[in-house]
Image 1: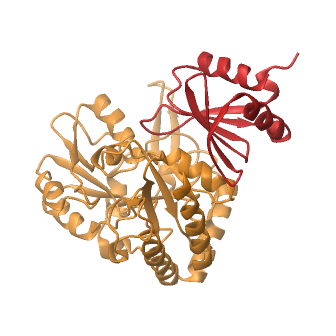
Image 2 (image 1 turned 180 degrees about the vertical axis):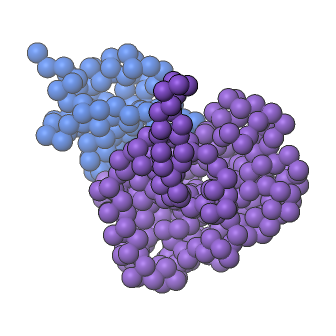
Length: 89
Length: 306
């Protein structure tokens, strides 16, 4: 059974006053991760197919075609994992 | 550390990298001296009146970066060193952002100590250099014990202890087996930069900085922090793009293979001066070109669509 660890290489907290997190997808799974996310999230804006401004369950985030996503004001890792599970699996 | 105690003061500025703040905070709690912070003006330049006004007979060490790692602003360390010495204090300069980018003459600037890092100047990580005036280092005790830094360790059987004497400089401060591979790599990086000529490195960076600032000001969404004249700054440009966090900006550029730092850049107090949550930072070095700045601007303009 697939888990988010199949897709996520690592999660980094951003440096700064903002409490954002950057999710970096595994290189070999990034295209699949992006496709899965785009199927489920609502696209609010996109630029040249390389940056997507998305929302999912009242959470806004940006997804980059390089295989990275930035989630704003995530309170803790459990909430992030739940979101990623629903978006990726 | 042995020369600092209660009643003494150490002065730093609010534009310092955390590496010139955190160690002083730690040691001040251990030794009981007072750590003071000099102000930075809203334009990112040092408030010299505040810095010099906080120097007094109690100040043992004044610490200042020669170049800010956030704004690239060049501080007049010669001026500050003179006032520090007039008050009987020693002058410690953080040269991590200056030594790799410009000629630095420790004798002309009359600094007592200068520290800089290998990885900021094309060298390996995990190694740096520390300069100290010989007469000052002679008076100081070693901060680490081990091999090489001693002249003798003579066991006295009657007293059941060893009588230890220190080696000459610089070995007195170089305990144990050093980072030999790192030092060889660091030496090669220094030779490479010396062959380029530090005056040439400086003028190349100033040209790029001037050009980049001129181009960045074309965008109405971009705000640049710190001085915008290249006369007193090096090739570091902190900026923000209206409506975007610095991390969005950095990730956007990352898509195009352009790397930049986002966040506090290990200088949170300076971001508090600018009232910023974080900033994006474009920086240039010997390998960058005007064409790359043009490419940077093309990408920056695409961000206007967001």
